[in-house]
Length: 121
Image (cartoon, rainbow, N blue to C red):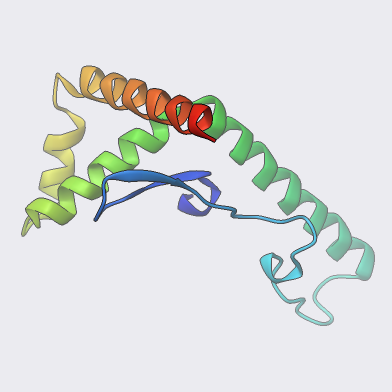
């Protein structure tokens, strides 16, 4: 889920930017109730479940920066190359034997960039 990512790659500038995705007090992040479909208690439990799921997903993605690098790199390449057959392009991209090394390099570059930005703050 792209909305769960804390950082994204700005395709134009090739720089990572920190974005705020989900605020606990942001009621717009919770879908509107279908009146009568759920009781108030069921809706409350569902909302709590959604929040916990989003938080869990966000935590997992923070612990695995390679996911963000992999997705950002893929989307960037699609936008640059604009293949006619995106499915075929994706199949080739994700079966590239060098993909692991490329993603590791992107993660290292991202982490060093973040450290450099923190040191400059």
